[in-house]
Length: 291
Image (cartoon, rainbow, N blue to C red):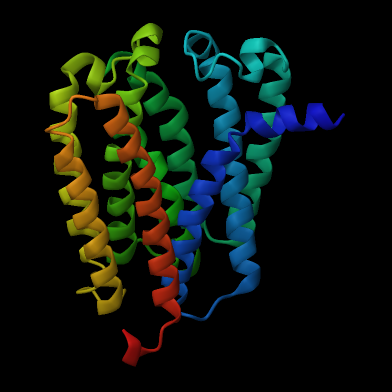
């Protein structure tokens, strides 16, 4: 029984859930400005988590024929038949119904709608485009940027400049993150026939794209301070973070070990989003003199 529960748990891609919950918390706390409604906070995290889990289970179902061609995914439950396709769909439906019901009942319609946009984008738009277009990663970044916006709108019930900036930050963050993955997993993607940027356009083009998206990420993040959403301490911290990340990126134009560099960029992207979210969360509780 324990093993069966673990199998279904892994089917939800918990790493993706935890990462997105982290950004949801940052969006929620930023909008709360130090005055947290605990009930709304828990309801938002619960609903967002279940919606993401549902989408991930369905993604496992949709991609099961692709997953069996890739080294890192060939042991997933639907590939090894540890879970039947029918049971996976039933599981996903239950998770989705619970998640969306939670959002519509305990948050607001806007947050429910943002969750729906992310859900549809991930399963339909990204699910289809990644099979035939090099721009699939860009399309998929929309779904990855919705949790932080959902956390924000759960409090404000409006998609204002703050929500737009947060959404943009996560779109721009995801591109270097996923392009780095695509670079060091390039053989996997080529074997699966997925036209990711490194496979179709080459490593040099991918490195250049990463650089431009990093600049966009830094600029979007910096906008949080002049718009009054964060203070100067936050701006200094993310400024140092951005410069460090760009420094690592520039090293990539001089290296011959692209796989090693891409892994380094991937792991630093995780540090970057962690620092970003912690910085936003802490700043929300700082008194004005300390900002």
